Length: 82
Image (tube, rainbow, N blue to C red; front, side, top):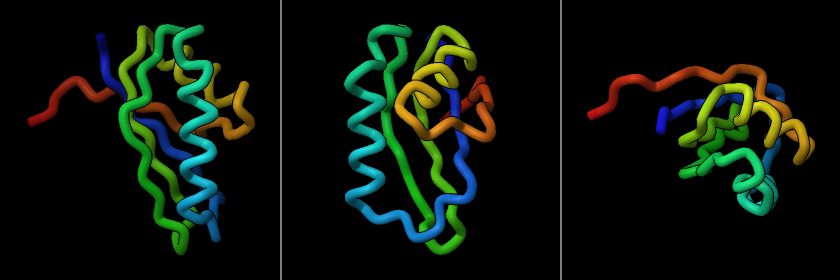
């Protein structure tokens, strides 16, 4: 299944607990769109969050994030990795 990296901006001040809660909200409904959220990273000072997932499409990733209340500003395919 294809991988995607999505990016959320304007998340300054995000705490570890906030990131964990948002990731867990995604995990709770990810199967409804056949998405597998693998990891999430944050830079609270810059206000940026990154999420790596496997999904059938970028739209599936977007739908999960919208439904859990933190829409992605960008979703990028990751066709190569090492």
